[in-house]
Length: 49
Image (cartoon, rainbow, N blue to C red; front, side):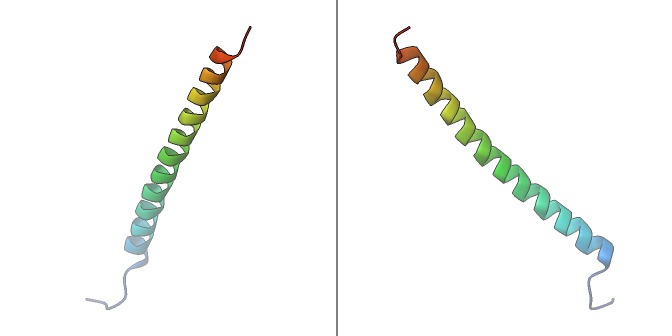
C-alpha cells in the first residue's frame, strides 16, 4: 500500500466535497430567494392598486 493517496481517489473526494458544498450553498440561496420572493409578493399584495 502506498502511503500517499492516489490522485484519482483524491480527485473523487474533492469533487464529492465540492458537490456537497455547492448543493448546501444552492439550498441556502434558494431559501433566501424564496423568502425574498414571498416578502415581495406580500408587499405587492398589501400595496394599494
